[in-house]
Image (cartoon, rainbow, N blue to C red; front, top):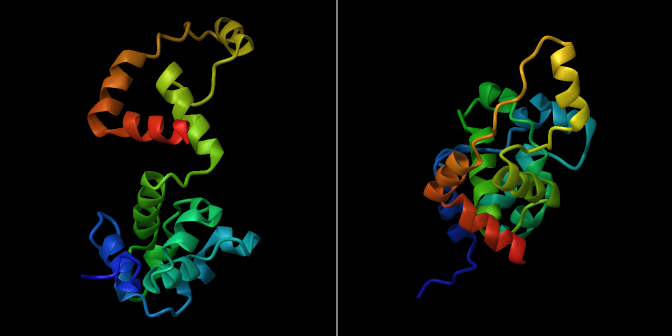
Length: 167
């Protein structure tokens, strides 16, 4: 029986997910890190390091790190990668795994809760509502929360979010 914590298992888990298929093509040249605007302003995020740790099977270190959530999805890394590693997509795959394992920064959990309850990530303030007519804008239509909840239920997002809220 295969050990569930072996390095290959995590790498395999990532490469079997949509977006993670190209991760094993990485040969750690560093082009992604040197192309990344986030890596230029904070040492907390380095796409090369995230991929290296993932390839080495460092599941908990990768999934529990807030650095995974710092990617701004600009795709600079992906466009410049000489090996055609779809780095931003690998980050998405890792985030999906992290979310399912209950590792998500509080701000995203708060956004998800607001989306499910109000249909908006950020509540529309009374000031904004009152300002719209003075700008010649019509009142905001209802957010259609019920339709949104049906979509979130169909994708299973509502169950993931409830799991996260109960932790």
